[in-house]
Length: 162
Ligand SMILES: *[C@@H]1O[C@H](CO)[C@@H](O)[C@H](O)[C@H]1NC(C)=O
Image (tube, rainbow, N blue to C red; front, side):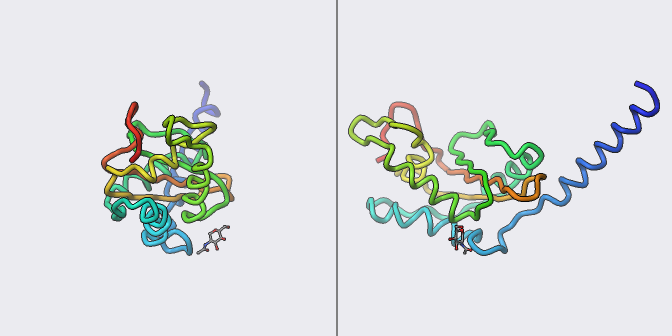
């Protein structure tokens, strides 16, 4: 690689760093407070008679992963179990709502998804006690990555959520 190549490489890295430093959390924005996330999860859990989730420090892990994904804005999971992800021009409450909408695709008796329902089964996983979420604006400037992590993680293969 010649001098010019090195120059562009350094420039690209500089921009990447600039982007990272701008990818900040959005907890202050409407629909993205810890209360918003927790409330969105606990309405359905209350209906199903299971204990509510508490907000947890794993939100920082979720936030860090959301920020890691901002350059590609893709729904690529980290290596953590118990992780829900969403992407779009949406707030945190809306992301949880989209996951909840999957309940129509869940067959409880067979414990099978008709389409996608893993986000839903994680939300209503009885043994999960804590949730923490993060949200970051993608480099494209309009879509967000939303990540929620659950502890203990749900979706244990071969088990029903409740
Ligand atoms: C979150 O997004 C949804 C869907 O766009 C919207 O209806 C709702 O008002 C938003 N919540 C807040 C608090 O802004």
